Length: 349
Image (tube, rainbow, N blue to C red; front, top):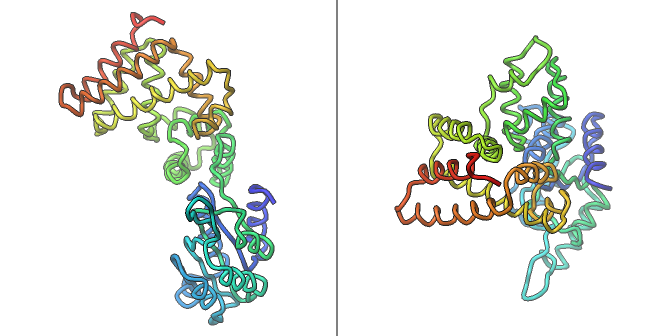
């Protein structure tokens, strides 16, 4: 079962109140893991029942897990046991090879327990590291449900925003949702916080437009740095400088602004190198360990600079970094010089 189908199954089980006895939650998107952690709790237990029927275990032994899972619930139908980072589903490196995380005896005990899970318990493993080759993973997927919570791409995030808006009686179209993502960033926890602000502001009005986002949302530093580089690539030095000064006025650190600027220039240069080698967006995303749509955004932005200018800017930010650390230049002055040299029409292509 793939990640999307497993999540759909979990959603349906919660909606139908047909929750299984054994689950594994893992993946990159912590927000979604936290969301379903909460949904399971709300579905199975009232707040007043949690004290006696909810256990949250951190890095427990196999025996401890079994002891808690075998405990009978009090005055409710089922108890809920969350196990955080047991390490039972990750290979351990020993010497030059990899080995199972625990003894074969532990694995046999765990597998037998999974096969005979008490119907009165819901056992949920939440793991940072999961290797599908482990005996424990294969046993869990045989008797329970493993759900991988992957980071959503731009299309997935936009659909989520549109659905959340609809639940609040509001409407936001796909381009406006994308604009919102670009303004806020891709962290779902941050997006949720900013959505709540935006939806509260627009409550009862119907349609959300770009101007509403500009009024309510504080763009992430990463977004503003991208806008600043975009202005530089379009030879709008005055606009780039204005973005930089606004960041200072709102309390951003010059050191952080420079670090993020250097990082973005480095990303653009690497993107341009991959493009020259014939890489497509998805290949660049894979090579740079980022999302396809972010790779496409960087490809668009990189195309606004001559390749030689990007290489020159990348080398110059390295020299500025050394100068900042040695005290020969301030980060603010370094940023101003970058804007002047690579953002004006005189910079050329």
